Amino acid sequence: MQNVSYGFVLRRLATILSVVVLSLCLTAATTGILLSFYYEPTAGGAYNSLQAIKSEIPNGWLIQRMHEIAGNGLIAVSLVQIVVMFLGEKFRPSWLTAWISGILLTLTAMALSWTAMILDWTQLGYWRFTIELGTIEAIPVVGSLLRDIITGGGAINTTTVMHLYTLHSYVLSMGAMVLALIHLGGLLLQEKEDKQALLQSE
Image 1: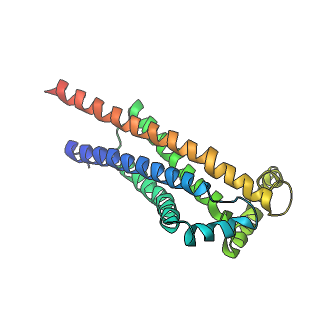
Image 2: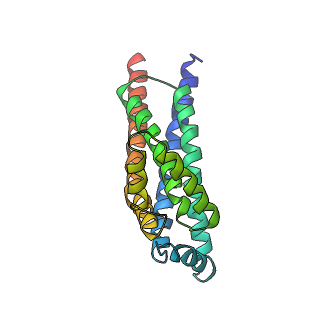
Image 3: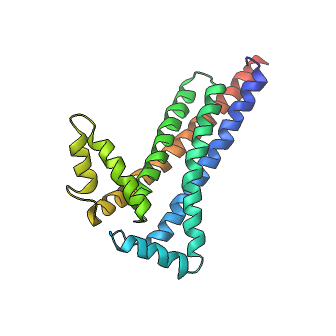
């Protein structure tokens, strides 16, 4: 485990995975923008618009599927990245930057998946979201306030879909993109520091 080459391989793998993470972010963002041209963020229109995208828009099903795969892939690769970085640990400011941004990116990817839960307005998504809201409401002190903010102060309806769509499409997606860039930058800086340390040792 203390072998220098072993650590180098893990850090290089972390850099490669960070490029994959950024690529998945770009894919999800691009396909999300394309979907937004036809998606209707309303209680009834969400389901109908997605069905229209899949069946009526040329290659719409492919774009929707790519968006879904990129989102799920982002979570999976981010989790693998955390493990790889932990195994190849090298405590420097650049590593700390990459580590913190990687954890935040993983949490943001999960939040993106969570906010997408009801955006298709299916029975499964609706009831899953209802259960999740019950869990949120059970949080002491702030639970009821958080539920009202998410739902718009009432039942699960068009306002709820619009709130989650805004969080999903603007706040979280932009946050994920920024974190992915910071994460890659931190790992590239770490590799640069490793090379300089190797040259100095020679």
